[in-house]
Structures are given as structure tokens and as C-alpha cells.
Length: 312
Image (cartoon, rainbow, N blue to C red; front, top):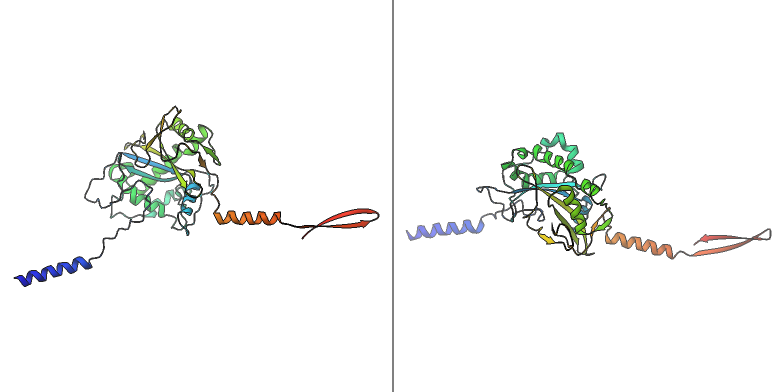
């Protein structure tokens, strides 16, 4: 009896030691999105309160992608100066997630064939190191599968992505900035100025997200997040983790939902900033232009002096 118990214990010990680790295919997902650390929720009810419709400024998104990896290559839509879609994210107030609600779900890009040209123009993947449809796959598996559980209007790939296109047409940040404040790319703006333009246009509290460049200590306008309830009606974006309400002194609104530094200007770029090595090359070329030597040759012709300048 004792021998059999020892054998069983030994076998269990071997199984524990040599069991394959529990790998997670979502380990490397974008940590900046509203997400959850533990995606093993198959037996839970995936409750949420809001849908966050996130528009991104592709120039900033491109710059951020390029700066976060030496091998990262970014690409822009044509034209580049248009707000594009990042995703529709079901979110529980004052927490994060849910995400990856259906582990058996697959992404079938063929379901998007009727709207694929529009997606290519308006739901753009700036991360050119990845397949063109990788952003769509990521958004559907991580966020779309959660929206599909609770909202009939979003329960298929075609509906989920089609709703994003519809919301972009109705609630474009480009339109908000053009209508209120005439805010244009290429300039710095204060957080109250941006917030006022958006609040006046949408009539709701939206969230403004900045990207901070550690090299230049500059902050770039990156994303604007608009919220909807489960009936797809506009709602305030309170309760988004990571984008808290901050005070705006001397502002009519008083507070804003943001991660931006309200004491510093926010740059709304009109082009992707150049890499450091590109700037150094331009400086070298400029210096070489200043170092050009000119040789003056005098010629006498018919009693008149003619001057010819020769570049050497």
C-alpha cells in the first residue's frame, strides 16, 4: 500500500514538473488600450457600462509606433491629416475591460469585404511591421467579441466595424475642431482650448489622450475618446481608468478627462517628426553649404572689368 502511494505521488510530481506552461497568445497586446491583465474569463459574465469610440490622430500614432521600437516602421493614410478609428471598446466604469470575451472566436476578414475599402481609408493600421488587417483582427477579438455578447447592433464583424464607420462620419474630431475653435494641425494648443472645442461640439465630456515624447519632453495630441451607452446614445466618459478628471483653472468647464499635462502646450502635429539621425544629416548638409568656398576670377575685356564667380 505504501509503495503504491509513493508511485502515485512520484507520477504526480513528474507531471507537475514537465507540464507545458500555460501560454497566452494575448501576452503582447497593446497595454495602452482599456484592457485586463487576466483574460481567462470564459465562465464569467462580461459586464460593461460604456462603449468607448476612440479616434486617433494617425500622425501621432505613427510617431509613437516608430519611437517605441528600433525596427518599427509606420505608414500613414492618404491624406495623412484625417482622424481615423482605433476601436470601439466596451468598458466597465472605474475598472478596465472586459476583453477577449470569446476565446473560440476567429477573425474572418471576408465578412468585411463590402466595407473593406472604407476600412482601409478610415480604420487604418499605421504599424507597417504587421499585416494590414492585424488591427481589425485585434479590435474584433479583444473588444468586438465583448460588445457582441450584449448589443445586437454589434454582434457580427460587419456590424461592429460598420458602426465604427458610421460613428466616424457622424462624430468626427476633424469636424469638431473645424466647427469650434478652428483648431488646425501644426500648432500648439492648451488643454482647455481643445476640451472646449470638443465639449461644445459633442455636448458631452469626452476624453483627450496625449503621447509624451521622453526625448523632447513634448506632448502630442494622440486620441479623442467619445462614449456611448448600450443603447448607442452619447454619454459622458467619466470612469475611464487611466484618464482621470483633472482641474482646469479659469476654465468654463472646470475639469477635463485626460492624461495630458494641463500646464504645458499640446502639439497637434501636421507631419511625423524626423528621426534624430535625419536631423543630424540635415545639419551636416547645412554646415557644408556654409563651408562652400568661392573663387573670384577677374577678366579684362575691352577695357571693362568682368567678374566671374566660380564655385570650388
